[in-house]
Image 1 (cartoon, helix red, strand yellow):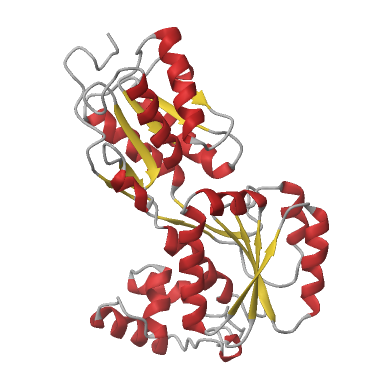
Image 2 (cartoon, rainbow, N blue to C red; image 1 turned 90 degrees about the vertical axis):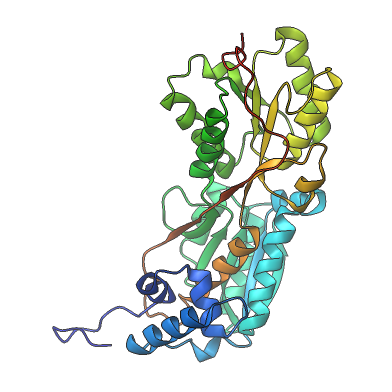
Length: 351
């Protein structure tokens, strides 16, 4: 394309099509790929906009390989619960639709693994790299000059040199906290395992909502566990109740496994959920509906994370310039079930 001043304008990206049509990147991709689940009028609108902007899906994509570098954290999560599995399902479904191959490379020893990945740079069949659940700053620094597109999946680059796709962790946690506040809860315990930036964003969202209500002593309402195991959450919560009594009326957890543990810990201590304490999780994994009681949770669009990450990466394939890094955060929503209820009169302040 040639600009008004005779200079080549930047390449039209799939993201431009999505923005012009007012749809998500994944919707635009599915519309152009002919996938099911897109309304006919949206499909027609996207196709017309693509034609108007002279956008074409790179023909060289079919048959290309995408290297998926999965961190040890991602691999552990894959074994324990379904978050990573759901992300990968969305990724592989989109790859099959677009005719690209996903080649998984486990990451366990940092810079050594990067050296292995760098060998793939000379392979013309490799279109780019996806890094799944990776926070290691040293590793990220080594990938910024790869010369091929790199997208972080369920992670972000704090220096914004690499593109990334995540759920809206901070605003989602604030949404969850405000939901509990509307039910009358003021002392809302936040249960988490520190370490990953995505989890820190969830902590920040809880803190934002608590501070907006002028909550005091919120540091006393943060509980940390050493691992994402329900039994550890149950044990930690049980010890707190034994030492301090029930000084909260609701629990928000940074992950669903901790919510399962919180329910167990409260029940072992002789309390009922949600009659005595409301419990809310984040992720909305399939098993959330089968907890006792079924868990109110923030729904994370896990499949869309994987699909959108691939769309974002392939949008850069064949580009003469890498372009600016883009951080895409996918919207989340609340799924109400039976683990939350209004605070009893006199209990909102923990009295």
